[in-house]
Length: 287
Ligand code: PAF
Image 1 (cartoon, rainbow, N blue to C red):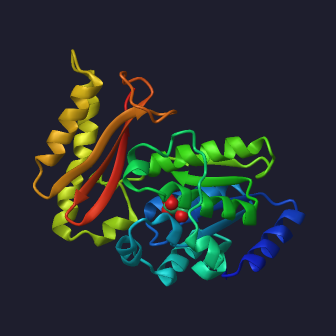
Image 2: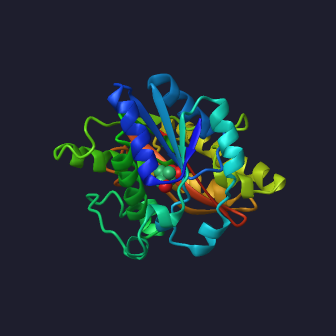
């Protein structure tokens, strides 16, 4: 496995592989890797000849400077894990290598047909512009055949699909296929997240209640007379009743449009919860 820190070296490495007709899989990450990332990487290794993993804490997607500063970083441990599961290249640039000073300080405005105006987009203005800025740059540099993303960040995935579909007409990313990968959970049900590293042992126990309540809500949705607003309210009340948890939002929306829906068909419930100081997200699919 080779660690690459410059864009030019990355482009040269992938171009050489492409010349040999090799298929390239890309897994974009912000590091602090856990078993959830490992499952994406293992799948990319299985389904492609070459697996490129980017490890880059992207400053332009953080609207909160403190969150950016506190984001866990450990490239040595990440590299060890990636090497043990068969990744071929790790791209770990500095922010200065990735962006010019102007790019770092300009707010990019992409049109996501409203997908960015709800839930995370509403709470974290500019977040998805930053995500798409870095992801589209990675697509441009690596020209992957497949790129892998976790369903835990469901809204991010919907926006990336939208971006790729829109640019497919222009042929910007060739025949790039976006691969949706299911949430990986601890045995307790807690969705794996790099942010879990910031939870104390006690907070981690508390955080388990989030997924328990989400799973239970699928049964509530099946109750006679249950409606989307009634289940939404029940989930919020149940989570808020757990000492140490505070819901920021819980919305049951259509899985394609991300807009509020009045049916559980093709619906997903997306939640953001503060567990102490740590902001956690999770989701659950209904029928
Ligand atoms: O999901 C993430 O870790 C990040 O948003 C991503 C896709 C790597 C872009 O920085």
